[in-house]
Image 1: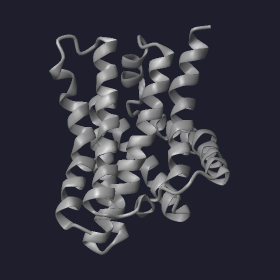
Image 2 (image 1 turned 90 degrees about the vertical axis):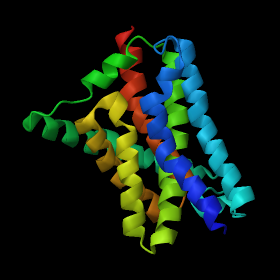
Image 3 (image 1 turned 120 degrees about the vertical axis):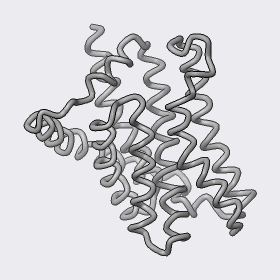
Length: 219
């Protein structure tokens, strides 16, 4: 495995989404337009394509080195089961705790998503689930663990970057809660060794929190 390729890959994986979230809109004349947001989603997807290229051609490693295996129905099933835990047990407990502590919730971030059409939100949720799990849970956690010699350190560094990438849209406190959910997703990924399960869980959870409320509010 090429150390230089891995370092380059980590730069893309750890810094790419955060920089795109923070500065991506500044490259457009009208950053709030739907066209600019679609282009930002394409740029986010390209980060994952770049990482896949680095793995295969730079590091000369199989995609299984980041937990990507052939499609199995068990992966989808376990992902949906874990998503059910996140939606029906973890999220209500989290919202209750934030209310008790008088913390600001996700209202500010959700308000930014309100004007956007459902089809775009579905696109963003799917791309976000694939890219974030691929970059943070799959690539960054695995490669940082190899470089540091510790899964604990590698996963912790990946989770910090994961949280920072959510600050521009959601704010600091909600971004911290994404670190908590990221911890659960990381443990789930390490337990299964299957990145697809984490991707399915991530997408399903975001659908429950973003897509379903949007659809029901428009009826």
